[in-house]
Length: 337
Ligand code: HSE
Image (cartoon, rainbow, N blue to C red; front, side, top):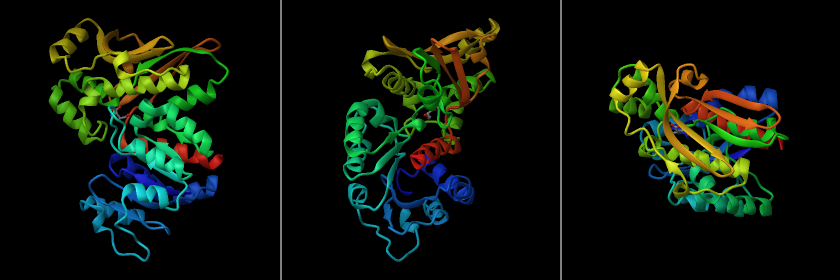
């Protein structure tokens, strides 16, 4: 499987490391082999080499600051722009892991359209194109006989979407709710441990949980984008950020956290969606609620169903390896056909 990586930050590098470290295992267990033929970044250059790029050298180059540090190789092309690589590059899949833009979804949306127009599948960790242009992309994908997979957009590699779509197929889902943002859950947990908000946020950024612009996390927009994606996936309903009551954790002080603790409660940023709409808001839940034990960057999602009652999945909500794995899971799903 020939891959074009778009975005080579926390998530793109996470996938590259997994593909490097599990190369033999993936070949042996699933007969899956892959080659990164191109890497596209916003400000650190692009590389295209039809015969494939060396992952260790890609990681060294980006650690040195730019893909321009990638060594000379036969057939290496450094001067094609993103759209040319996507359109003309010999590849099977684009992996979209550039920063999420929830206002326009660009430039990722143009990249996704170009990929489908040139017969490539899309595997995306970028929430923008899915949240803002789901129907358009799915129509284009169908016409092109290609797939758009987006497990990485909700709860990293914890198989939240696949659980609902595949494992619970046949159930009618009436509500999906949970803790859907790793950064804010990490901050709230650290504040309970006595850390101040700014330091906890800095740590969440350092650990690769936060979005490129962490305002999206702490103000609730990242969780809201996940609500939009869940609404599209499970209710076939198109929501926009303006349709929803969205509140983040920026108004929660250490004193609020202490007060909740004294009352045997915890603050959690809860997201929920039904066929009628979605919301994101911080709520105080009792320690006896199972979700009170979901700490740090761990997230949880509950599907309320007719045949199975409530089914809850708890797992990583963010992180380099965890989101890299989500992309791998989608690539393996494509490989299985
Ligand atoms: N910034 C997101 C979070 C990344 O903290 O949950 C995973 O979508």
